[in-house]
Image (tube, rainbow, N blue to C red; front, side, top):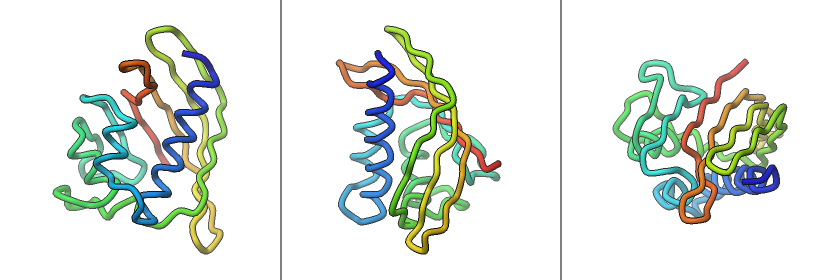
Length: 136
């Protein structure tokens, strides 16, 4: 994996979250395309159930579902998501990125979030295996 591969994966993630909010991409397809089969996630706004450890729980966070606190983070809708990487570490097996991402809503309000992502190659596709984000 290269730094460019990670940046492209981040761009796919940002565009996917926006498309979910626009109703042009299903959360299930987004997660299937971008996450490994058994990912680990600490969602930005999760408090009562702080961690998500399977695809169904991650889908619940993005669009609401069986976890009561989940209201559908991706349904905001966001109009722009920008990654600002502090550091990307690449390797052939697994890579990591940390930094901030900025979510802009339809009222031009920007939310700054800290993130750490882990990435692996699955059949030649960069996928997320670890996703941690939190408000400052």
